[in-house]
Length: 166
Image (cartoon, rainbow, N blue to C red; front, side):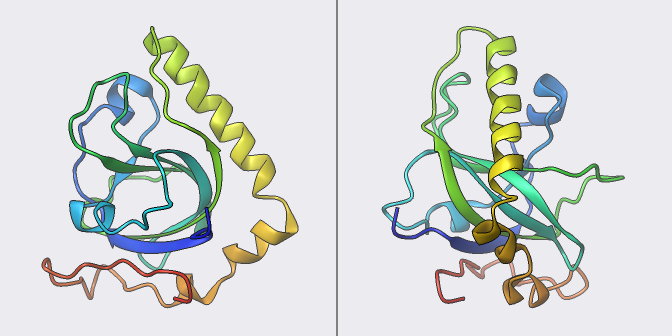
């Protein structure tokens, strides 16, 4: 995947409502404008990297890109699980992410428990890989310090996808 690391940002929108409720793993969802502008070589699957909400701190993250086979989605999504406990939801905030690596392809699971176990395994793998020096340096990338704040929201018609070279 030549497009990695991949930098993008967009407004957090309401997703399917399953992350927190069914999985116990809250996710932040990007709008179609971000999903539809992914480079062709960013395939569906599970990725890891760094994320920042508004002008907040940068945290480790895992992201699912695709159709979530367990739920048989008909719409492609980008769902980011930030490895941090937030005090409240942040719908409408700007989420900035850098995807630095690929963990695995999407898979369907026969049980919800198997899906949750796989996600937890992905989280543990991401935590380890993000400690590598080549990935740690991206946590401090100027992309995150240039993130717009929620007090200066983007127009709703703006596609805010920032490719390599941000």
